[in-house]
Structures are given as structure tokens and as C-alpha cells.
Length: 110
Image 1 (cartoon, one colour):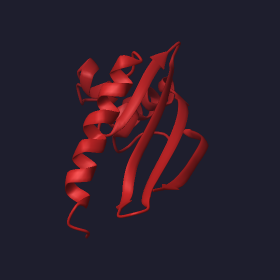
Image 2 (cartoon, one colour):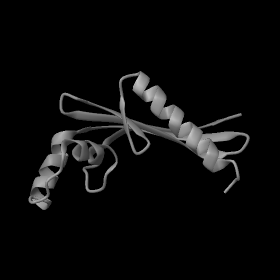
Image 3 (cartoon, rainbow, N blue to C red):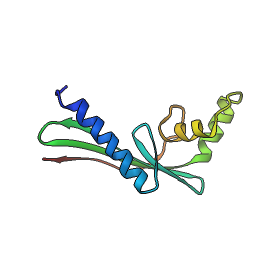
């Protein structure tokens, strides 16, 4: 791993959170998201390579939140999840329904 990669990722992650919050989005686990009318839309990005040129990968997804509720009720009926934990799991957690993945990509820039 290049020596500057961990520091570059920390700076990237901190700025990503700042910009997302400036735009009214919430963040969890490296993703910015919004929950509107029963849907969760999220976008994530990360630096895959921190040498010149930099490589930044990103993805965006949209999914109906009710699908997670159905799975959780069927397979984890006794598990009590707080509203904050439910939001976190909907965006980046395990045991969730796959999202519609309208786009993902990679950008290389100096």
C-alpha cells in the first residue's frame, strides 16, 4: 500500500462527510444518503489509489426501505433495532435487500 494512502483516505473521508452534510445528506460508513418517501438513495466514493494519478471509485443506489423491514421481520423477528441502527443497516449493513444500482464508476485524475 502506498505510504500516503491512509492519510489521503482520511482527508477524503472527512471532506466527503462535510460536503454531504452541507447538502442536507446524512452519512454512515462512507456513504451519504437520504431517506425520502420510503426510499433510501445513497452515494459512496473512495480513493482506490493515492498516487499520481489518483483513482477514485464511486457508486450510487436506490432501494425501497420496506424490503428490509420484510426480511428483518421474517428472519430476525425478535431483534429490536433502534431507528438509528435501522438507518445504518439500510445504507451499509449486512442482511439487506440489494439496491437498484443505477451507476458506478471510476475516475482517474492528476
